[in-house]
Image (cartoon, rainbow, N blue to C red; front, side, top):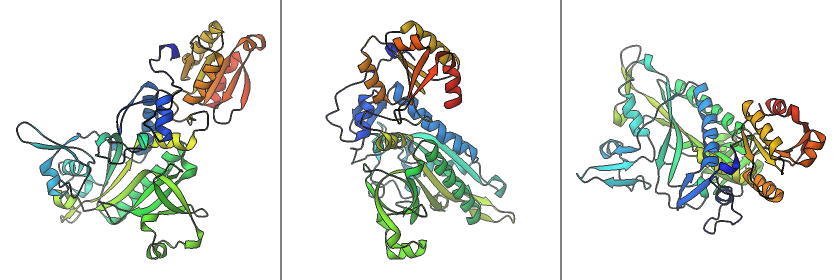
Length: 415
């Protein structure tokens, strides 16, 4: 993409109504636009990152046998009444509406009820199980603390996966496979070293759960980490009884602030019982399906990457989710830069080409803010030496690469 054709612009001004680093940087760099408190639109650069995060998650869900679907955001009152969750006193984040004919509807904050009802049409026999179904669905939650940029919002995409099993043992196997997939996801998007599977309260779904918590001073949670074993637990369940159950020693734990980037729950028959999701076993006996649910918010992951990996100059995107892999900067040498841009793009290397007529200093500063992994600088010295400067955004290191070898260099380094 030519940057001169990109309708978004980088801003030097920090948004006055934003306190979170992720919102400040993403707005300034032209990745997102704030519509209202807790509601953001994703602009071309931001959507590219969001889709990259979604792509990583989708690959890992497919790898463990997940089947993707897409459920509706509009949900029926009667369905939620069957599980005793329509009442605002039970679920206080509902957005609800009443149609002109008096019909009450909710904008889905979660999808346990719809997916359970759906499976009653397709699960009858033990031969139909086990099953993993997932979606990327827009959720709506009346979030009262919408002050953390895209990490805590009222409208957002959620990857929610649901497992359906015949036995406790089978459920445990599915749960373990998703847990391992989540750890791979966070490793792939650059958060692996600072993210812990954390023992936590189960909230409205179950007594206990596991959260995936990324250490960050921007976090709203407090966790206790055993750095030797890599195990952690949330402060809200930090009791001597829990420590004993987990075999953890109080003196080995370090308190850290963190951001919750994912969670996994065992649901048991919490939804299958009231909604009639059953199967017949090998002996013809009818039994309830055992369920689990597993969530990751791609936008929250994106915001957490910005919070934890950015520096004083701006965003630093991991290669796996960057909007482009190369930022090509032409310093008054547009003819040669044009040729290199064509060569890179024809080689399948995603490239943002800054072909604008602005100063070199402005190009460098904006490139650092946008945070694309590699800057390729084409200036007067490039033509004289036959080499381009290739600068890594993550550490500022610079390599000199022959112009004729640029495409091959990125196929090896980045591909």
